Length: 301
Image: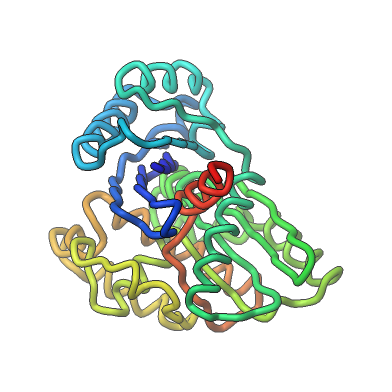
């Protein structure tokens, strides 16, 4: 089957074998879906063209014709005033039908994939908090032995970077922007107790983990990223390393057009260490796309 996640920044496609539970092939492209969304409330034509072009490129690399395709999209399209018309245009030009899913559904499917990955890594923890820092939203998912409490917040790397423009500005307002997250974390901990482990997925944590392992955007290897541990102090080190690179080098390190967003993401990530009261975090590459594939496989069998 083929699972597609159209996020606020990235299009991620996965071809997955339901029988062997193995990934066959994957495709990923920065499409900046949410570009200009903060200012205009709509997804612009250039972003739609980038999305369509990326899907068509994925279709050249992966055979969509013989597979069940499940495509989901998240915060940027949830928020856009023109979501229906752009999804109609994408379907007309690519044949792919996207479903807009809620923040709660996004959290549930992401948790499904991360739990699956933690099991394969034999990383047993009876309670953990999972953060998913996206382009348009951040999901906080507290998983206890017999209960999951999650919430989606409209704070993401694209929206924060485009609203506040400079890292200095972001640092000034981040505490306020993330105040609702702070309240939510405090309430969960008061009611349920602190979790044992901190887990992070999505582009910012995986990019920092890749820098730690000496990988760049081209040499990125998800199998090595999964299970990598990051200390809170390392975030400053890799942020400074990123900012001190010449522009061309930065583009090679983290991918074309991503460095400003990753820098904003690192500030959000660092704040989450503080809110959740952790010094270290386990990074997992699997996310929404893999959760969509796992669930689709369950429904096919």
